[in-house]
Length: 231
Image (cartoon, rainbow, N blue to C red; front, side, top):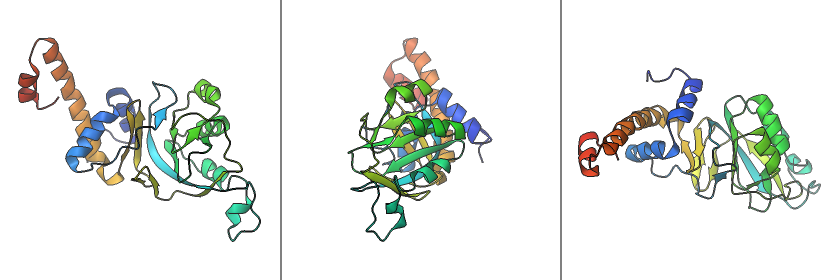
């Protein structure tokens, strides 16, 4: 058990103030977790947005009507499927992370952000587009997506499940995994690896400060790596 943080609030504060995704990714590589970054086209709406929290995975599916009556599934009869239920089930510190659809419409918007903020959610990461961009930026809600596109999901997509494992760009995201995103990417830290990964990243971040000081004082990169083992 680490002594570097006592709960998620402390860990997430350290991550926001001292870490960045590249550091955590480097440590996960050393641990043998070589494929934990979501695809590189998933970017924040604003350069300085950072998201970190527990994953609340949401499964989306393409449809071809807002209400489908000739169906075996009750969820198909409801506009947006069970998106509203999924949104309302977000807990403080959780990240709404959604995949499963084609990139034809927006999976996140301004009113969703308003509700998520009221609940205390940490952010949204979607494998598709977001919309209502000016509103989201005004709210300052950390939102990561493929970009912005106004086309609505209403007649095109539905949430069909949530709090279940999903695949996002070839990465498995399970409920409770840590989602950490900044300008350089979004990384998924498996629950069983989080303590070692973040402890290692914190050690690396604090070590890199020493390396930076040494380089600024004229030490060569060869000497610095030989002394600190960090570069």
